[in-house]
Amino acid sequence: MKSQNLQYSEPIHSLPPGHERAMMSLDERLLLYALVYAFQPQRALEIGFAKGGSACIIAAAMHSRGLGQFVSIDPAPDIPPELARHPRFHCMCGKSPEAVPLAAKALGGTVDFCFIDGNHNEDQVYADSVAVTACLSSVGYILYHDSYYPPVARGIARFLKEYSDFSDGGTLARFGGHTNGEHYGGLRLLGRVNMVP
Ligand SMILES: C[S@@+](CC[C@H](N)C(=O)[O-])C[C@H]1O[C@@H](n2cnc3c(N)ncnc32)[C@H](O)[C@@H]1O
Image (spheres, helix red, strand yellow):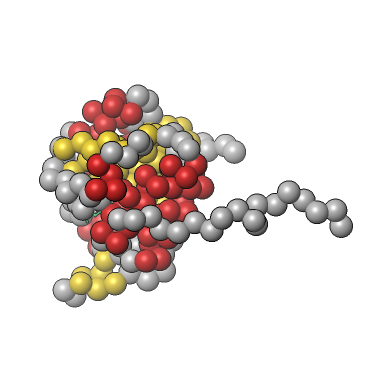
């Protein structure tokens, strides 16, 4: 059979410096990198920066594609050296949901990918989702961290009940973990249903 120009000889990607600052398991970090790499967002948003671990992963996946700009919102960001002068990354010191439209404005258009990992209270997860929806593109994705955590799961369920233009990709990482008796972890993906390839 005639050989095809397949991609198998491409270099294997590895997690970028700074990924160890993420408050996520290794399987979730790898998944986050792979999803951002696959989605190829032009404009990406994160709610909940903390020490920038997940932001390092998102920025690196975008940079490896040579695409896009990325804003992360947090009231108290602790910016690592890896992101201090990153060409695709901008930090917004503020709080969601109020800062979400400002972040979209700074990005210069609708958001293609949003990672929600801020305040894990049910009302806040719902409010963040609504705010993101208002500036999400018609082919946009929302990814939640800690979707196994019951208040996060309830916030997502409430949002999905009211916003029928989203399809639920489910929680992609099988196992979360327990901290102080609470079930955390899990990456849950929602996508706008009118996505066309
Ligand atoms: C679980 S940590 C984020 C971890 C980070 N995504 C990572 O894995 O590297 C949650 C962060 O959300 C931030 N946060 C809390 N309320 C927020 C809000 N209303 N808007 C944006 N960020 C918020 C907190 O300051 C904290 O840094």
